[in-house]
Amino acid sequence: MDKDQAIRKAQKLMAVAMDSRGNGNEAERALAQAEALIRKFGIEQAEIASTGAAADFDWAEAFHAYGPPKNPAKACPKWFQIISTGVANFTDTIVRLHCDATHGYGVGFYGDRADTLFAQWLAGYLKGCVWEALNRARRDHPAWTRIEAEDFRKAMALRLSSRMKDLRRERDEEFAAAPNRQGTGTALVLVAGKLTRRDAQFGAPQYRSSRIQVRDPVAAHKGSQAGDQVGFAKPVEGGQARTRKAA
Image (cartoon, rainbow, N blue to C red; front, side):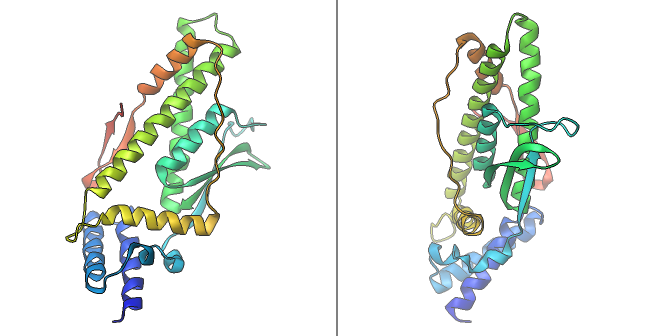
């Protein structure tokens, strides 16, 4: 086996290790075999991340409509765009505004199929959490108008996005702290390689940042507090899950 063959095999093995649909033992064996090839042939990160292994990923798009099926949305509000961008960064996907002829405005997530399906679900879950929290807050503040309600939603969306960023950073730190025998953060290399190939497939994400203004600080504070109460499910060994909160 020459180095080029070793690179292609290592790419395929890493794709298997990253595939959440497989079992843990299979992923562990694939990662160990990939690490052995990397050490033996002196393979660099850039070589592993080359686009030659793009076929190892199941690229897909998952659309999430903002409005309900019988009432398609005519726009996608800013607060939901904030949440969707946070979800995309958290799930290794790219998000873009999209309008479907039948379902109205919403967002499309682009990336590996398992990631896009997770992003699609998470966006809907967090959207529901915002509406439920707002309904509870309105019972305590019956005088709130659309202005206070929108400030609540935007503040809650910003807090959720911030928490997802913290969880993503924590994940990357854990991956970087799981080196192979040569001290390379192999798990983080896997993610970086996937993102490189994702951007080659769909184009690099381009998100514009804008200042979010609120007019009612009380409503905004309540929204931020509500964002701290939402739990995020994180898969653990054995296919189980646990709920965790970020600071």
